[in-house]
Image (cartoon, rainbow, N blue to C red; front, side, top):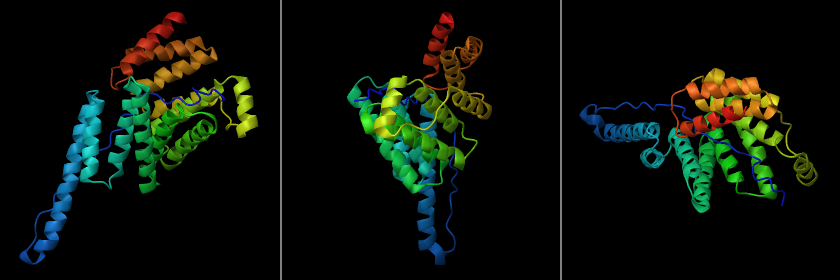
Amino acid sequence: MLGLKNLVVIVGMLLIPMTVIAQDMGESDSSMVESDSSMHETAMEMTAGSMSESEGDSLRAAFDTDGALKAYLKANEEDPDNTTYIWKIVREYADKGVFADEDDEIKAAYSEAETWARKCVAMAPEDSHCHLYLAIAVGRVALFEGGNTKIKLSKEVRSEAIKSIDLNPNLDGAYHVLARWNREVVALPWYKKAVVKIVYGGLPKASNEEAVKNFKTAIELRPDRMLHYFELGVTYKYMGDKENARMNFEKTLSMDLVERKDEGRQEEATEFLSKL
């Protein structure tokens, strides 16, 4: 009814390396064979999970989303209590939706991302990554929702990003999500904001200045990530600050391709620069 299709757009995937280290445990003396055998099996399961995760990380670095997802799902089967595997599953489902062609496939991928993300938060409410990827997942799901559901999910994106920052103030992705939320809310036409306020009680305060602040924090934490510079450039472009927009787009073009969407970001940056 409100037509808020682009209220929340959370793009670009987050490559936040985390290695799970497992130790093999050998057998002890004959009086401990049964106990040690059980412990050894557990250790082997952890090792298998870590190996599958490592395979997933390598496939992700090679831009093989489907392969990475399969590997992380295997890691989860081998160690279902390890929430690192779960938020990496969320990340890949979110990527899968971005690169899918059909709406049904996109929606299915985002729905899976949300399901796994909520599981992650339920299992590890103090894990900042779980909250970050829940913010990303519900932001993607919100793209296909309308009315009250979209507004509710939009608010959840913001609150989950803030929770993630509260738990880990050094997580660049959470600042990026919060920055994007601010920019997209500011971009809403005034009449849509008025309707949202009347019908749904409005949205939390947002500003492009806050978006810039959060993007800059993300860059300070991870200066090697192209998406932060590119989206900061887009924000400055929206603000009419051509000089800073140009600087960040040129920085985007100078960086190596690390994430699957980086090539597309450079193409967009080139197009934006030609129009500044």
